[in-house]
Structures are given as C-alpha cells and as structure tokens.
Length: 431
Image 1 (cartoon, helix red, strand yellow):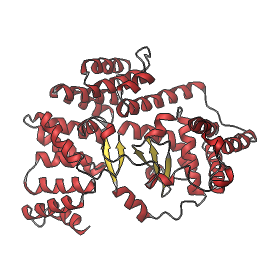
Image 2 (cartoon, one colour; image 1 turned 90 degrees about the vertical axis):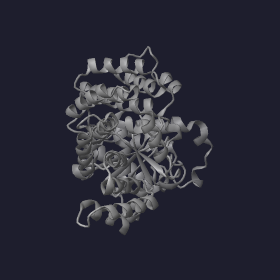
Image 3 (cartoon, helix red, strand yellow; image 1 turned 30 degrees about the vertical axis):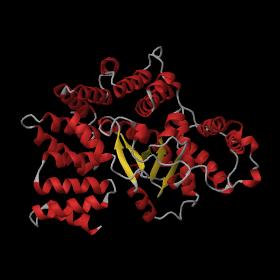
Image 4 (spheres, one colour; image 1 turned 180 degrees about the horizontal axis):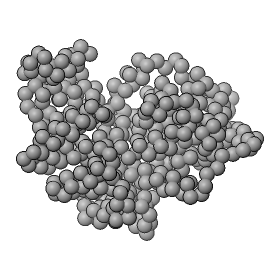
C-alpha cells in the first residue's frame, strides 16, 4: 500500500501549484444539489443541466457561470450554518445571471477556467494525494482569478438587483427568504469592525450592513413568507450538518476539528467529523469505532460504509475494505466515486478476477463521470496501448498537456489504428 501511495503522491503533486482544486465527492454534490434545486428550478434551470462544483478554498464565496454551473467554496460551506442560507447565496448568484450581469462571460472563458482546475476526491482520492489538505494541489488565491467573480465583486446597483432577485427566487421556490438575512449577518460578523472604517462612497459595491437592511425591508414587505414544518427543517439541517462535518473533518487539522466537535458532542455530525479526522491522523481504531457507531445508527447510509472502506484500506485490510465499498456501492446506486475507490483497492489486492472487476468499474466511471484517478487505475491494471492511452487521459484531465501528448503518441504506436485507444489518443493529440 505504501508503494501505491508514494507513486500517486508524486504524480498528483507534479501538477501546477497555481491551479484551483475542485473537490469531487458524491455525498456532498448530491445533497447540495437537493438543497439548491428549488431555487434553480425557480430560475428555470432544468434539473439535468444543473451542475455543482465545490472549490477547495477557505473564502466565503460562491459564483455562477453559464447560468447552470454553480461553484461553491469549501470556506462558504464550512461557515454557512443552515441549508436555507446556502440556498439564499445561490439565489443571489443566480440573480446576477438573471440580471444579465454575467453575460460578458463566454463559454470559452468557462472552458479555460475548467482546464486550470485539478480535480481531487475526498475519501481515498484525498488520502492517496498524501492526506494533507494544507499541502494539496493548487489552493486558489482568494483575491485573484475566478474569485473575482464572487458575490462581493459587482457594482452597487448590480448587487442590489441580485439581492432583490434572490428574495424573489426564494419565494418563488417556496423557501423562506430570511436565509438571505442569515448570510448577510454572517458576512457582517466575519468582517467585524473593518466595515465601519470603510467610506461607502469609495467602493464599488454596497456595504454588508446596507444590503442587510435592504433585505430586511424587502422581506418585511412581503405579504406571505413561505415556511416549512419544523420537522422538515430539522431533517434538512441534520443532513446539512453532516456535510459540513465531512468537510471540516477532511480539510481542517485535528485540533480545529475537536474545537468544533469535542468528544462531549455525540451527534452524528460530530462523530463523522472526528472519525474522518482520526483516520487522517492515523488513529484508525478510534476512527473505525466512530464509523461503526454511525453505521449502527444509520445502516442504510452508503457514505458511512464508504468511510469504513477508506479506513480498512488504510489498515491494509483489503478484503474488509472491498466488502465495505461493495455495500456502499449497492446502497448508493453505483456512485462513481465509490466505484473508483473500490477499483483502487481491487487493483492493490490483485486477487484472481480483481483486475477484471476493477477494469469494469473504471470503464463505467469514465462513461458516467470521468475522473483522473479512474484513468490512473485503468493504466495500472492494463498494459500496452490501453495503459498508455489511460495515462494520456489522466494527464489531460489534470491539464498536463506535455505528458498527455507523450502518452498519446506511445498509445498510438502500440495500438491498432481502428482501436478505441488509437482514436481517443488522436483526439488528445489534436488539442
């Protein structure tokens, strides 16, 4: 296992350290999509066109590109305390799109941005990158690059319009618009006394205090404010707390995790965060105990089995890891990230039939949701032109054009001209 971790560490960290890192995690993406879907539908975005991207950066930030691609920073997710507040942030960003404030951003600009991003999975995908998020590939500088398209950077008029649209979208979605008030109150608290020293006439966006007052006034003038049953709010909040715990467990250090989730806290979210942090810190016994507690409480949750698979993999218990991933895969309806994790463990265990099963899993992932790690595994368990083509795709996904072309040429030399590997390698060489 140490050998494969060392190889992957070297490969992944060879990429441009100035690139942004996208977090790929099935649990986060699926649950966040559910939270955002009502306002996306209200903005007339078809469900099958909505795509969530999680940017690994501590900024309190989010933005929308192309009207359908929603980028949310991990810093925002860790700090925003309720799912309704998160919905309000996205509603605000969609307000910029509806207001035509993003029209100057072409599809080409979006494509260029996507090519600068390195995709990194939580779970096994993060651990094989060295298990140290603070040293991860390309944390994006918050004051430059794509962060300039944040909810803080538009003109005063555009921000006011987007805030108004946010309230309207929330109401149209039958969601409580007071989530926007939560957001502005958090922004105000984060800024502290700094904003009181700013001359409002010398900045191109409204002060948070002004936006907070405007939102309160607009909402107070509404005839009917949508509300949910307390039981629905509680369930949604608990699910959101699990997501925040997962991010904090993976991305913060152990001391920070225990500050937020001390051992006296016996909630699912706290146990989840601590189990992840303990796994990252090498305390696998404690991590496993916490994860088994979660599985006992929620035997149908696939992501707790996924975490158990991660832990068993770290132990080197490949048989137990495979069993846990297979259970997670069944409960999650074949989530691509779990398929990739299972394929990785199978390729390492290397029992008779393992490579065949791993090959099938990787090919399914590539068809459904391509990932660099799936291509890397495919290269590892094959040889000849197939292996070289997979490595070309791996480097291509990570923006390393030089190595992508190198392996594409090797793949063509070793493949028949009518083979898929030859044709796909040719596509890489044309780029």
